[in-house]
Image (tube, rainbow over all chains, first blue to last red; front, top):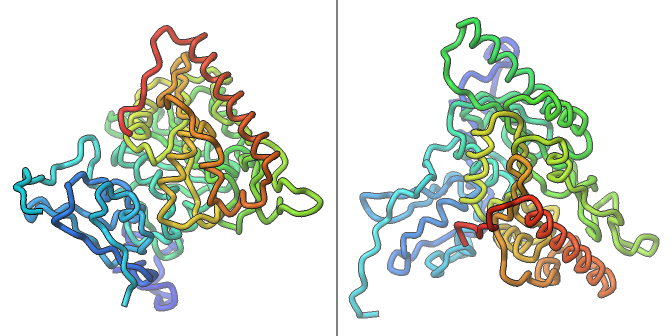
Length: 97
Length: 324
C-alpha cells in the first residue's frame, strides 16, 4: 500500500520517481469528501444497474448473490448522480453524520 | 404494495465489463462526467491498450504523486503532443511486432486530451496524426473550458458562456462571444475513417462508437461532451441530465462520420428548446432573450445542416440511439 507523499522518506522513493503499483490511488479514500450519503431502498429497486453504470467513482458494485447493489463508502463522494438517475427513486440522499 | 410482483434479479450488464481501468480514489470533483466518460471509454477498449494523455483535468486528478489511478499503461505528456506521442507509440509497436520482439497481438493506442489540449494547444499534433494515418483513437473529453486551472475559456467554449477569462459584464454582455469550434467536422475534413461525437449520458452509444473506432484501419476521432459541474455551475447530481439535455436540444448532436458517411446516432423527434439546456447553468445565467434566440437560431441551423449532410452522404436511413 502506497504511503502519502508527506510520509515517504527520501530513500523509499523508487529511482526516477517510478510508481510501481498500478491503480494505487485506491489507497486514498475520497469518501471523506462526502457531505451527503446515498441510502439504498431495496424494495423499490428494479435492478436496472443504471447507478452502477453512471457512478463516476466506480463506487457502486453489484452483489449478485444477495441480489442488491452495494456502495463502497471509501470512495463514494456523495455526488448524488445515482439518486438523480435512478428511474424509480430507490436511492435517497441523506445528510452525512 | 401487497401485490405479488415478479422478483427482479440483478444481472450482469451487457457489454459493460465490471473491470475498472481507472481505479476509484481518483480526485475528480463530485459529479464529474468527464471521468465517467473516460471510465466508459476504457471499459469499451479493455486492458490491451496504451494511453497517451495530454495535461488537463484527467491527468491531475488521476496521478498526484505518488499515486496513480491507471490500471492500463499510461503516458502523461505535455499539453500539445498527446497525438504525436500516441503516433510514436503506434509506430513503435508496429516496428517491434514486425521484428518479433513483442507478441503479435492487437494493442489499441489511444491518445486523450481535454478540449484545450485538442482544439487549442494540441491541434497541430492532432492534425498531423490524422494526416499520417496512424491506426489509433484520439478521444477529446470536452468540458468546454480549461477547468483544471480555474475555468478559462478555450476555443471549445460555447457562445454565451461566462468563464473567468470571458466574464459577462457591461463590456461584453454575452461572456464568450465566439462560437464553439466544430472539432468533429474538422476531424472529418481530414478524410479519416471514423469521427464521431458522443456523451456519457448515452453510454451504450459512446461505448459502441469506441469499439467501432478501435476497429477501423486508420485514425479515429471521438469528441465526448463531458459535463463539468464545477465549471458549468450546476449541481453535481445533474451532470448526466445536462449531458442528455445537450443532446436532445441539438446543442450537441450525436452523430458519426464513418468513411465519409454522416449518420445521426440519435434523432429526437422534436428538439427540445435550448432554454431547457441553458436554464440552471450558472455560466449562462446572464443571457437575455435576444442572446438565447441567437443561440436557438444557430442550433437549428446546425441541426438542419447536419440532417442535410446525413441525407447527402448516407444511403442508409438514420438510426435512432439504442439506449434512451
